[in-house]
Length: 391
Length: 203
Image (cartoon, rainbow over all chains, first blue to last red; front, side, top):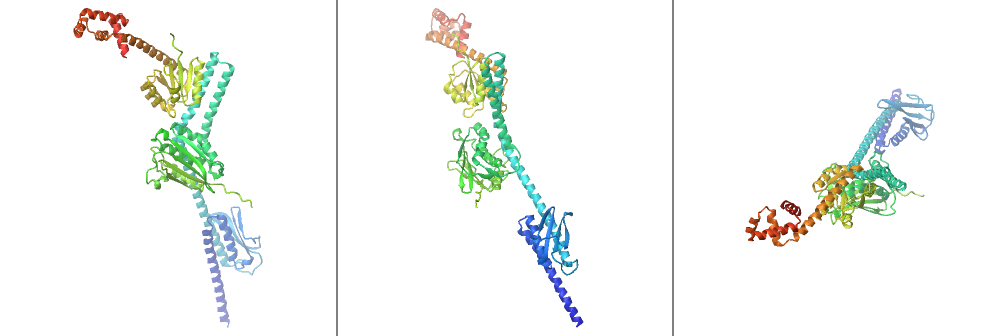
């Protein structure tokens, strides 16, 4: 009789231990699922782990849980600082960065560690360790993404500077004009003063022109610097037409010297787009530069570039750049947007590939079509700023 | 009759450059006229006026070199001073080979441009004088009879009267008469001077 009840007690204990073991495995499996479902958000992962923990303990209704990680706190709704609690250290790369905590809101019968089971201690340690690994992995992913973004940013900048480099000769010529005028005007003033010819008003008028020419040179350099500078990608509301008009001056310096007429056909009252203005200018400038190069062999009278803006559908603004050049070689669709693909002798072959990645990062698209009468049109779309809900 | 005052024709697509060069030249008492393009210059200017051209090498539309070519084919005698940017020197060398007087680099020292313009004016005056002289000589040649013309060509070739007489089937006396008329119509005092006049007319 005594033996029988002993056996029974053994079997109850065994069953209890098994149940605890199953709960423990369920909990660890649950954590894996949480990580998979979370889409990489550390906040969501830690919040879900806390909730899962509380459900797993022997008296779930009276259980609260909390994770503290580097100053941030994730806790169950019922969390309170209670008398009956157990903790496990949270370590990332062996550094102590926080703590995982489970507590009972009311007194429970005594077990292995206060009111907690031995399995619960083991589980808590295991969860703390898993959580540490998850944080490590997410941080590594984040670092990798950050590095990738940095490299992408540098490549974007490098390509932009290289495009400006291709225009260096045209730009230098353009800056040289006001300098020449300044030199001639000032030397004229000097001679007039030395030889006592010309009256005061005349000299003052010439000095005014010197100032205008200096400001003109400054304007070119300012625009150039603005486009050449390094900056962090920043999506802001911007007006596509304004951005293109701002670019027109610098672009026309180049087109003019190549006997290309640059025509703007900008649709009025386009909605604002969400974009990094400089990067978008880079895309358009690159397309204009390509169009100029495509028309080197074209008859001077036919060297035209048309830049057009319009509303593509209700959510996209479309920019297109049309040339009347030789047209793209057949079967280049595949390679055209690949890095290092170029038809130019001095090209890096990064222009279109970087342009495409800029446009994609804006949530837009980029493609081209062959014109019927020869030449090529490139299209870029950029999403407009979503209208705010008044409700 | 005194020649008209020489003019500098400034052809440059940049308004600032055009105007400033004009004012600079005015400050030293030189007249300048400005043109924004080669086409504009061809349309509005008289290439027979005395002076010189200050011409931008690099312009949209008709380039400086193209305008130079057009002017040469028209027989324009205005000397050309090319204005170039730093990178365009090879183009300028090409232009000088094609007959341009010289070139200056933008931006330039006033004295450099002024010296070259003075040189161009002198050069143009010389050419114009030569052309005037040649015109005069040609008029004299035109006043000769065909026979006198034949005799003159043979005299210039260094042939003696006797030889000329045999070649043309004339008496030596007749050749002498023709020869005296040639010298008088051509206003030449000696055979050497006659030779010089004929050579200049053929230049």
